[in-house]
Length: 315
Ligand SMILES: NC(=O)c1ccc[n+]([C@@H]2O[C@H](COP(=O)([O-])OP(=O)(O)OC[C@H]3O[C@@H](n4cnc5c(N)ncnc54)[C@H](OP(=O)(O)O)[C@@H]3O)[C@@H](O)[C@H]2O)c1
Image (tube, rainbow, N blue to C red; front, side, top):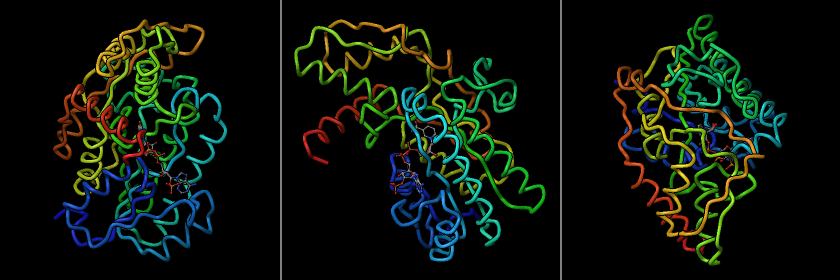
């Protein structure tokens, strides 16, 4: 018997980019209710709001997705806010959930928690082998503190807290606002706008030499739902596609799929971020039977098509 069937499942951040497909993936596991609190009603950085939310919604299971997130630029501009808000939301919510007798708590961590120079592929046991890449360290360490909180609560209170670490996500519904978007939506927007304007070139941050791994958002959602249902131990678990790609290859692929044929100009004065990223996903397969299934080109095509419709006002 899983943890979801017949239960009231609260998903913080459940109206966000990852939250919407997570709610859809939970639906097939027959919960009694899926509860999606919004920030406007319950600001989770406030203890009183966290208490009120848990009293109002009485969840059995909490999946904590709410966070302030963004790409390298947003991390560089908001290190204090990203540290404080992400840490305090998780700290308050897990503590209050434990006090109210919530039976399962899932925290979504991040690949930004890994040390800057982790051997590739990143194994969960390497999480503590060094300091994260500087631009995303405040965000990564705030999330990493919640891993320790969950492990400590399991040890002291027998609280069923688990921690899932997804790589960079992409897919329909992503944030395409250039001031806060991640690399894939930022590049898609740039390539489409350059194509439509007939621009001769686009400019891209960094040197292109860094590598990344990207996971389609519905694959990540399925992994989180599977972990919420069946994973009940303290070890953090990576979610990734197992496919490493350099930023240079990524830009070329996105330009091809967006039909932008102009020049790509690199701006090496801008940061590359972490040099390499690719995770080992053996643990997710072994512990709760999850592997990613979406082909990268197919996922990118769907994302580009979604954005082309959305920007014309179709979504
Ligand atoms: N996107 C990625 O590539 C990626 C990769 C790895 C991990 N993650 C993790 O996945 C989770 C979801 O990310 P996302 O990309 O889906 O972000 P998102 O679309 O920005 O969603 C985050 C949600 O958090 C909620 N939120 C923010 N501050 C809040 C507050 N003070 N009180 C209550 N709710 C608050 C917002 O709720 P409202 O809509 O009500 O304002 C928002 O919908 C995060 O924990 C993130 O760290 C994301």
